[in-house]
Image (cartoon, rainbow, N blue to C red):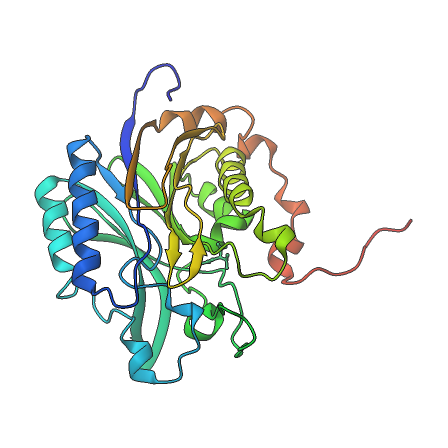
Length: 319
Ligand code: CDV
């Protein structure tokens, strides 16, 4: 997909993962990532996007009280002893990557947990870190549910904002899973001239308790990423961890979406699968010079409630 010139192509892969069992080790997960990294490199990709929390099973589905048991799902350093090989192989192949993982940090002398992603450049250097802002789910114990969604218990909301990095000759931004449903995520990055948003996700389609929502999980996945891409004139690369994981059903549909809102490539399985697209970054520019010329058409003076309010209030106009 190109603006007619293919002037600034970036060949990118969404490296989708099938389920990760609770018993699977970091080394086993990294071996799967390595295989897909090599496949993507052989297909000419310069950048590979892996899923959210892709080094362990999706543990927020369980109530965990034991601190050591919980800590075992987290990384205290990156690269760490099991992940270093991924950085080394990426550098050898000259491929950058996005990786989602659970981060255990010490800030102000305090232990803090984040749902994090990093951007690694083709020399194996971490150029960016993002911490998930929009945490879904709940913090309280809900034993009646088959699966809980305890991101609000296990993670703090991200405190790094939505930066955009210049790397691989592109303006790259990151977000994680639930962030993709929120227009603010893309707009903040679009205001920093993002050309490609990288994101990983774990999206169960059986957990809201409302069949009318769960049944539309795939539709909403596409809708959110296609709307985000189009309305903000950016490529979006969304990568799933999917399939039946410890009894919970996670959707797939990893996809690469163009700034036109069109899907350039989409996964067809619920397993480890690499999908690729040659993305013309200039497509973002032509949309930003026309429909989405922000400097010409935005009216930020009218958008006050977006940053002033958290929840909705009642109508403010007279009938
Ligand atoms: N890991 C996520 O953030 N999942 C959320 C929902 C389904 C809980 C999502 O937006 O996909």
